[in-house]
Image 1 (cartoon, rainbow, N blue to C red):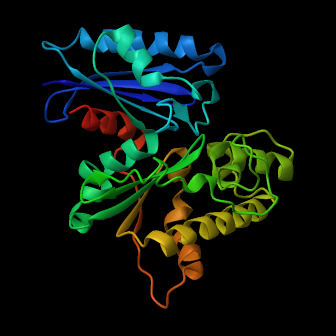
Image 2: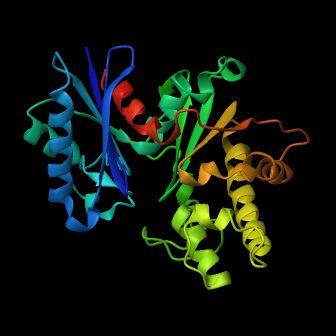
Length: 296
C-alpha cells in the first residue's frame, strides 16, 4: 500500500507520497500560516492530502506528525509550541474531513523513528544500536526515544521532552508557563534572539553562522555551546543512549559535531564517554518519512 506522510511544522507543512518501500513518488511543501488559526491548518492539510492522493494509483494510508503530544485523559493535543493546536482533537478532526483513519504522532518521535529505520541510526556504524535518541532543534526543541525499533512514549506520552527541562532556574520565560526551559536557549528563535540582544542585528541563524568575524560572535557561540552541553549531557546522564541524532535547522551548524560534542562530553557524569552525536541523514524531510512509518 502507498503511504502519505504529513509533517505539520511551525512554519511549513510538508507532504509526501511513497510506495510501500518508502520510496518517494511525489512531495510538496506549503506554509503553515498558523496565525490564521486551527481551522486554516486543517484545511491546508486536507488540501495537501487530496493533492498527493491524486498521484496514487491506490488508496494510501495516512500518517501525520505534529508538535505536541496527545493527552491520555482528553485525547487532545498538549505541549505544542504551535499553540493553536493545544486543546484540539486534531486526529479526530482530520479523520472527519478526510473520511479516513489517520495515525498521529509527535513530530520528534517521527523524526527519531525515521532516522532509526531509514537514516543515520540505520547506517553501518549504528545499525546494531537498539537505543536511539533523536532530537529536534528548530522552531522548538524536542526529542524522541526509539528502543528496539519502536517509539517509547512513556507513561504519560511525554518521553523525550527534554526541551522543557529547566536549564536555568528562574531563566527565560517559556510559552509552557515555566521559566528556564532548554527550548528558550537553544531553539532557532532563541539563538536568533540572543544574537540580536548581543549584536543589535536581526539576522537569521544561517546569517549569524556566516558572520564569525563579528566581535560579538565569540560570546554568542560560547553561550550557545555551554547551554547545548549542559542540556544534552543531562540527557546522556539519564538515558545513556547508544547514539544521538540531531535534527532541525540548528543541526546544520557544523561546530556542534566537534566542539559541541566535546563540550557535552566534559559535563557527562562518567569517567569515559563516547556517545556518538551525529547529524541526521534525512534532512528536514525526516518528519514526513516518520509519518509514513506510523501509517502502517
